[in-house]
Image (cartoon, rainbow over all chains, first blue to last red; front, top):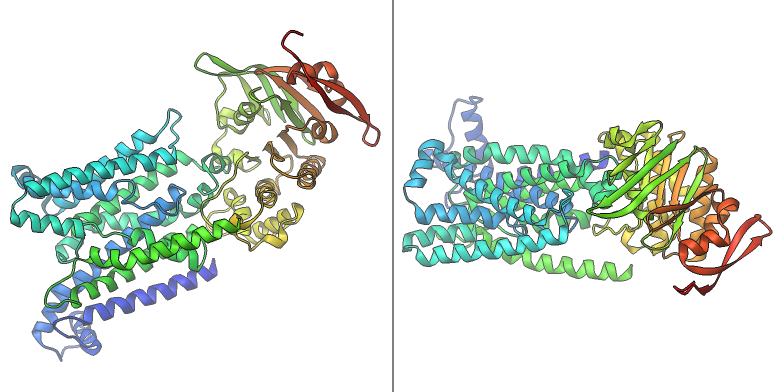
Length: 349
Length: 263
């Protein structure tokens, strides 16, 4: 356990470094000393300013919220991916697979295309929470439907059926999203592209505040399930014999993961492969112990997404690449490599 | 220790177990034998608390199994299920440590670590401690799982251990090893209940034998009392010959011919 703590410390330092670099690099350059000066001035530690007002404005209103949002979304996607893989006892499972992401995205797209009074009505009540809530509701509904389809009379979920049901839900959500794309106007189409490809371009302190309550609960609570999720790897009956309330564990994991992913999708669209690849890398590099993989995924996921976003917004300046494209391009070869390694390993046994 | 009273279990109108009665004491190794579909696994699932009895009751330490919380039961009762496939690459010592999960909150104590070591030693998997479980042979995997369930109740005097066909698919050496570990545990005061396919192993290692057929109890008693030509032919529908193993002085069953339906 002590070695885990050291690893978390190292990963935490890496995350902070990545965030600092990402906050400094961009169209308006900010040096580390300037970054430090802005933060110190804002905290009232120094009274002189050694930077331009535009640097301060860019850092505080554009860069920082974007870095924070990237870290939150990355952490949530990776931690949800790691727990869902543990829950489904399948290292290839991820939120997208059981319909969470596509359900969330579907509801967001419906909101955009129907734009309609309903959305205004929702916005009036929930303000900036409207879209995250819609996406969360979409994520919950799809997950619940998938779960209902797969849960047997004795309240046990059959994993194979669950995955199949997830595939079916993904196909349905994809078809409806496609239909809405067909019906949409040019401007709506741009918005929909944002959802399906994923981007952190919409980041502001408001979006950060909008998802914070949802993702914070997921990130803080999911690591507490690690030990039980380890036991679940042995099988549902076996975990029960070891004193674990399996149906409660499943329900808690699904609700927490759904909540986090739904909120993330609401502000950043579908960013694939983060939830799939990052837990995998940790498992292969260190251990399959979820007490390491689950919290570790949050740290690495945050760092990776902040870094990926840095690349996405600087590689084709002044334009911006949707981050989902980038994570897919980087993630797919890693994913294929993982499959190849796993195959070799299982052939030995 | 374990008292089974008028136990019945049915799914819909199909009765899988009817009116089963027996007792097992601490220090006893009970083996359950019977043909496929006789209700052995159903019985073990009921004993393990995985299924709830339709009628009758199971008392463990004089308390109905239904009144136990999952984790209080898990502190002194462990179960080795029949299939143990793992898709995630855990190391052997990590899997054995899972047996201790019910005893600690977030980090294992020194005592937990010592118990894991001792359990691995007892089942002969200490050399494999840092191997990936999925790279082990079937016999090695089974002994790792046995180490895990032993670790779970290692420090519990009068613990209870349920084994569901622990020797299936293993070669003679591993079968022998697993059953002698079960025997050792019983001798140390544990109450061990095991489903077995091999009548001769049951005869050789068990204190008590329960024979089931179509959900009924055919016989219950010591191997010498219940393993006889009549009971075995009745339960398995085969004609057998009976010898005596001179070394252990237990009955030895040799299959002869299949009984035709006319007889």
